[in-house]
Length: 92
Image (tube, rainbow, N blue to C red; front, top):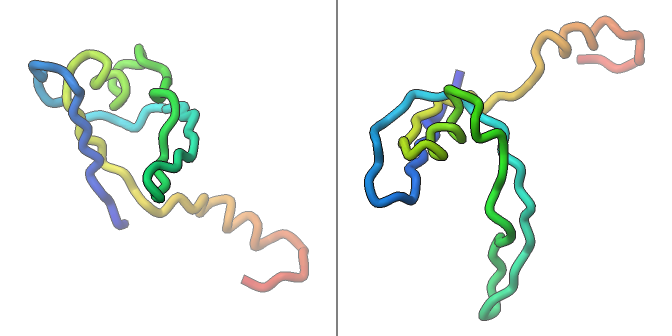
């Protein structure tokens, strides 16, 4: 499977170290901002579950950099196989 490494570094004067993490849940409240004829994504700083030990969000909140291996194929393969058994008149 195609995997990327998501590396995050906290904006702190001294990083405590590096942690290998799993992906946490972030909540974004983005807004499209127009500035000097260009558009940027702005908005509030993301929130999430900061105290879930072992997540990238936890690591950043605690002052650590994080490395999270992420698969890009998010297909629910088991559900896809189950859907093939449905009688919908659709061929795979």
